[in-house]
Image (tube, rainbow, N blue to C red; front, top):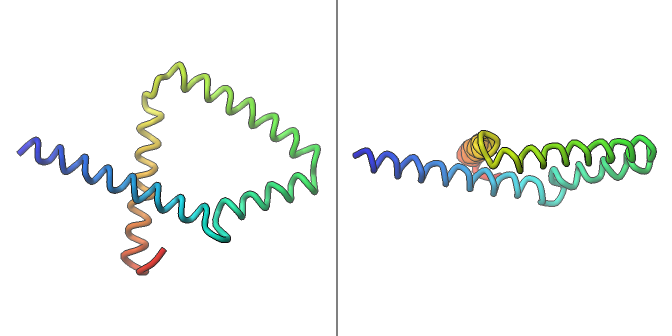
Length: 104
């Protein structure tokens, strides 16, 4: 019985993570999705405020590099658990949204 619940927990985790990845990907890359809206705002910022945008790009590079170095030293740890939990939460949201509204 213990193995059954462990397998059921794994199955639910996989389904929720997949639903989260698919939902976020769909919402991000569809026509007029999150990615295109965000990309448009970034392009507008570079055109309107090029010096500030260049400074922000340099700052983001250093933040990325510091995070990447910490991730390499951490070798996973809690950071990947939080990513899985976030994807499971997104999967729960998208499944609930689909059940209530009938579409994404």
